[in-house]
Image (cartoon, rainbow, N blue to C red; front, side, top):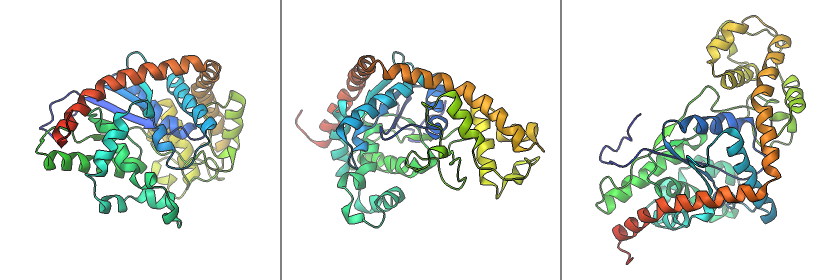
Length: 343
């Protein structure tokens, strides 16, 4: 198990990650994040958060937000995260996130935030109309991680810049307050052959819950018939699969389906290509259907069961928030003392 690069930090190895409760979760969320969350349980103490404070950087209907928080929690459980051995909770239930975010607002520099490409993408041409929360989002992300002194963070490529900022904030805090080694410099965990799953309708675009076409993605609550239908209708080309990955260049839809097959089967894309070299998609797609239905349909059934038991979901979140708070509270006490607050 690797140590964080700040060798002066001597605390426990701990994983933190979270997902926003906005819209329906899909195959990209599972392969890019949750499947790895489950695997990391065997190596680390893990905190998995439903980041509802991040969600409100853009307006959310309150009723829909509550439903989405429960939906993400249900997906965590259905994917195989153990809420007793590890911690599942919603961000807003632990005040340390907001408290530490304000302190980090005063540590981070405007120039750092101005370089964040995701804000530019999300704000678009109407930058002046974006919320302050959307602009300061990376500071809250740093607080999410460092409120627990997490050492490792499973992230997608699109979040790697934010994690680098978290490291910069941790280092500046340590330096500014003469607190060498207080915060670790969290390391990214980017694993698996499908950390970036693309649309089933356009292999050049990331699979997204905001895409207007429902057939661009496989939702985690899709039943077996719908999973099969979406894969059969996934865009491909007329050529057979090549005998090497090099042959998938300039074939984004084919490359995407091979990557999905590899991730669902726990194999490498090279192994998948070796097995199906020369095969037409009329052969490959049915094999992918069988694999996807076998992996995803049981999870969809569990999610629907949890949808019918909101009281249980809420109890998991309450228990997780209590345990997360018990970790964060003494850390926040130390932070306040370091900053100079009277505690």
